[in-house]
Length: 201
Length: 240
Image 1 (tube, each protein chain N blue to C red):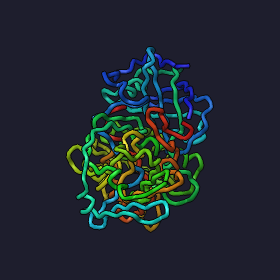
Image 2 (cartoon, rainbow over the protein chains, first blue to last red):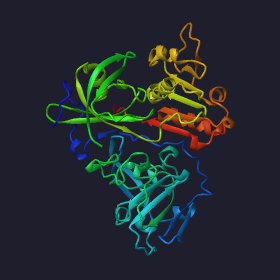
Image 3 (cartoon, rainbow over the protein chains, first blue to last red):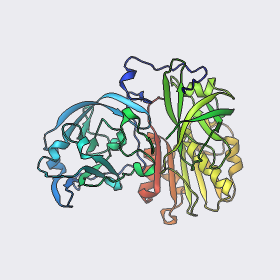
Image 4 (cartoon, rainbow over the protein chains, first blue to last red):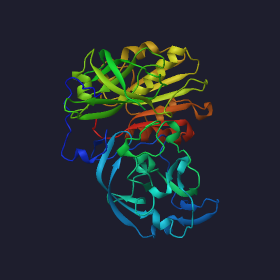
């Protein structure tokens, strides 16, 4: 049963509103959502690593090495579980395919880990074949600290919390592991088109 | 998580642009202080819009109270602050968020820092603290632009006792007779009003992004453990 809200018109049914997933609304500038203070990162100490499902470190890049990797431009829609969506956000980043190029794995999942113990769990199939990047630049500039300094995973087809901030590495795993946000009430996979926001969705 | 039917029991004007809605929610499972809900409005042609609002009422209260600040050119907040009235119904689901919560399960000092409508989830914590007559020292630092923007003013005055304190600071103007602080919540203010890091306080910071960034950075710079500084931010969306 649909409940009609007496007197509610809805002012924003702009052309193209059907392009965004149910329950979302469009914004022009995406806001920030983190649960703890923004860390300051010393790029001299920063690195990003890939660990395979046996626990072996199979790749590592320093900031300078990472900056030397081939980058791609992407223009993608982002959908935040807190309801806002932005169309055509422009990013420059390294494809996750590039990071996993030399890695031989049977893992089904990847855990992106970030500064301050943030983790994000994803099926490996969701981050390969051109679906995910590690962003180095946003809208022509490097990401501001509060938007995820240095390098931010970008998995635009899932809710934006899956794009964990302040990436430090990828760990491959046979097991799915609930992430920071999932442990406090958010859905495990986070498909915006199925409105998988919260536990039980 | 399923949608619940909420009936407006009462609308309470808070400021020129803010209204608290007291809601009777069928099958409300209860909430923790600091959590929020999603509200869904549906137009006659089936178009619907959703937004998130923090719960202002204390856990265990009979009604769920939301405080909504009207945003110019917003879509949902003008409806909730000027159109809706007692007896109207809306859809709601929640509670949501298990991190920005104060449970009252220990007696560590608590510092609450709110900017503008960021005070709403902190009000749930203060009310919870009062309802439990909790011995943990709790301190609210509340930053607003002008005196007329203060939410819950009379109730905040009444909540002050030997375990709870409230400090307000105005960032835009200091009217004649104003005895509170003036200016932004900066490192100096926090070093005076937040407990020192050695007391292991928990901090909850909520407000617009630049406010939260500044306060959280200042707390960390003063030596507070980042893991004890919990933040909730409102983006510059104008989306409400």
